[in-house]
Image (cartoon, rainbow, N blue to C red; front, side, top):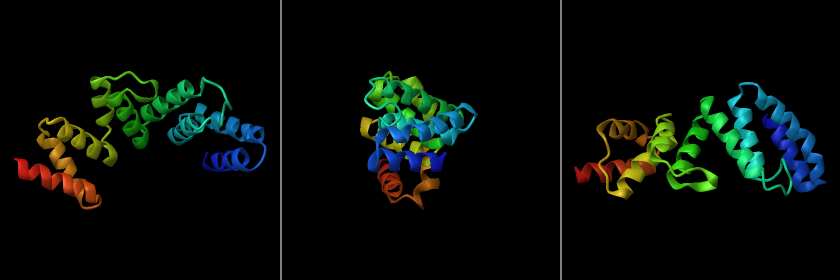
Amino acid sequence: PAAYVLLASYYFYHEDQKDALPWLRLLEAAATRPDADACFRCFHAYRMNWALIGSPQTQNIGSDYLRRAAELGHTKAQSMLAEEHRSGANGQAKDETLYLYWVEGGSEDAIYSHAKYLTDKGSQVPDVLMADLASIAEQWPNAAKLLEKLKRKR
């Protein structure tokens, strides 16, 4: 899937855009298998309008691939889908329950984003989430700053 995206990108931006389509079709074929990475890459292709050049359907199809990638366990897709449900972006329903469902994927992005969201909203950050935030704070400077801020508030 990574090679298909690279080739599609090359043709889309440097050659005739229509020459990108065969590579995108191969990517879509890979996404029909339970391949989270292929689904996530298809999501990007549609969101960047590569797959249906000029078609208004690209956002909806891209959202379908994002959801499929998330369902297959792609942590970045889970985080992105959670954020879309939190904000109502890209045609997703603004839904707190779906936001929390996808945040529970536990990716580092999701942990940080959820803790920051609760902090910005003025809500209490649960102890479990504080522990998760502490576990990523060593690798994420922003997570470390947020953790210190939250500890000072308690």
